[in-house]
Image 1: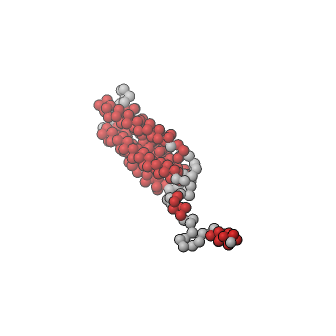
Image 2: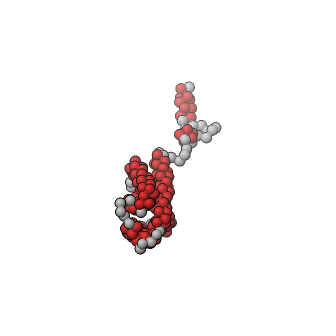
Image 3: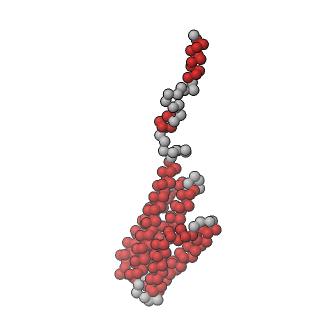
Length: 208
């Protein structure tokens, strides 16, 4: 595994940096994730954040295990198997909870297709490595795939938070009408006397 140390160092540092930036982004926009007027956005943003964190954490954990001095291929493969099995069990539990809440399981599976492929590739390579196989290239490719998937999901999350922030910044009842247009809509049509016109006529007659 020492021949791959540079690659694992790069994947670990990249995943850790991007995960830290994602933490900061969510901390700054924490109010957009709390229950309230943007509850519909919350349901879309939180699963995206969870998916991104899971992928980043998997890449960091496996890369760090591979960088342990003296770590053998079989040890790293066993760690990959445990990590993949844990993620699969977690996803099954999440799908069951989603079904009890009335959410769409199919939509959740579609969102995790890339992650499923990445963890599946990681599991395949890990099983081969644990049995003294030589699937190091596939193992490295699975980490790169998980890293790319997490970055794509993070970008979707940022776009979702941006849309939520723009929607919450609009005043209540805003419909795209400018203040001048709204004031003009309350004026009487051209050619018709205003409601105050009869009162003014009576006042002039009384003075006469």
